[in-house]
Image (tube, rainbow, N blue to C red; front, side):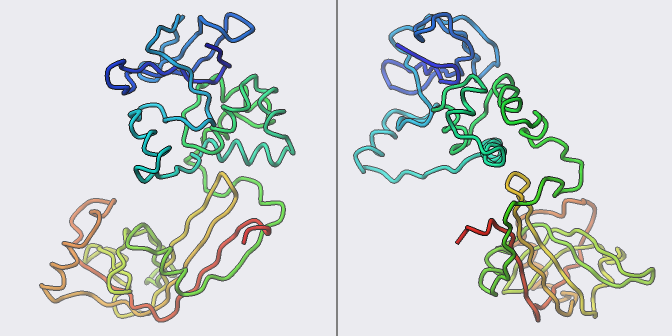
Length: 302
């Protein structure tokens, strides 16, 4: 048995092959990677000295084997074509690491050497959802000339978009089909309207119902002033890790839903209660008369 720092030690049930415990190898005691190992266990976060038994094996991230926690039979299906396998994309930490590495112009192996982790683990981290240890992230931050806070996506109370712009950004208009796909079925957007105190913008939980935008508010709340007027509604997404994003703008008249049956249908179809809480019984529907959108991506993206 041979391992690198950053590999995972998997302990399985000898009878069923189901993972009973797994942890990240954070320390070696022999240069050739043979046991024992210092292991940080996923279930407790404790680091212990481990002499692996016959029910344990090493998982080298980036290799084609079952993910920790998955039954061995799931991997067999993937190898034989006996089942459909979903391919997971990278997690936010991995994407931040990959972007920081790209901006520094560093290769995978060079970065791994600087951070004292295995290249296979760094490749896994950049391409799969992962939960690296604090020590691994600190070494990566130092190797990449950034901070632990940035790699973790800290500073969540700050306004979004404080990262650097892409080197070669591409801003393109979205067609109607793309806009509707991005709005999808529900989410959080912002409604812009004119009040007695001037222009105002309010975040609302929205639903897409029969191609229109619907949201709930209180009859005496300021967003209720949208009824009977043309308003703007905007939804967007900002990808902090990659300095990318999109926005979709809807413009159209707003009306109150007063028919009890229609109100009941909207209540039944709602994916969530309003996050702001309170009694919000007035449904407002915005008819889509103009629909536009934009997306920022790297220039070399298709």
